[in-house]
Image 1 (cartoon, rainbow, N blue to C red):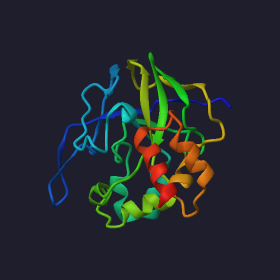
Image 2 (cartoon, helix red, strand yellow):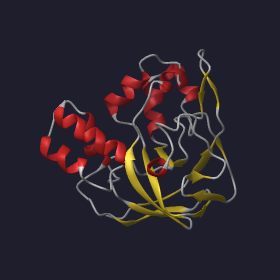
Image 3 (tube, helix red, strand yellow):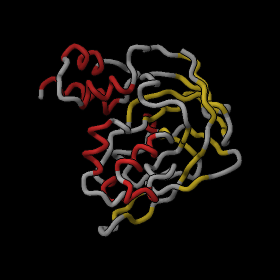
Image 4 (cartoon, helix red, strand yellow):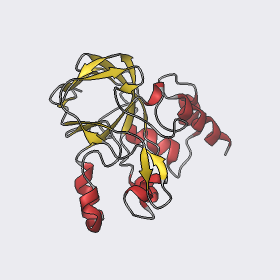
Length: 216
């Protein structure tokens, strides 16, 4: 399967206060133009407020499909102004590939960098404040429109218009949609969970989640 799509937007952002509780968050990001460095921990100039759950080697870049925003606008029309690329705190925005098109361990060339899919995004309650919707977290958990994370195999540079090109797919049966269903779905598949708990291509925190679910 050939996966190739142009990069439509790049977003970075500082840490700022979010919602009535004024919690520190870097979910509100802004677009950048020109070439930007991709370091081992992500884009130069990008920040994460909660380093326990965001950022780090396994979550260096967040990708969110731009086509999801049309679905969100249809679902929550009174919040449509908030559903714009960058709204979910993503660094990379594209059209043409979603969670069912991307697999765990996929390696992509982006500009001069080499990046690898490490896990889906696990949403948190800050989405409720970001979109002024009390059940936003539950909605994302239910529909799986989460986006995903990359680790950086080779640092480099990129810019809007560069092509995100799949180079290697070691696990073609493990789409992010399937990964999400195994780790967060209602049914428990013990064989799949055991396999994921041992797979080094999966981010460490999600390997631990797989192990915990086996005994839950």
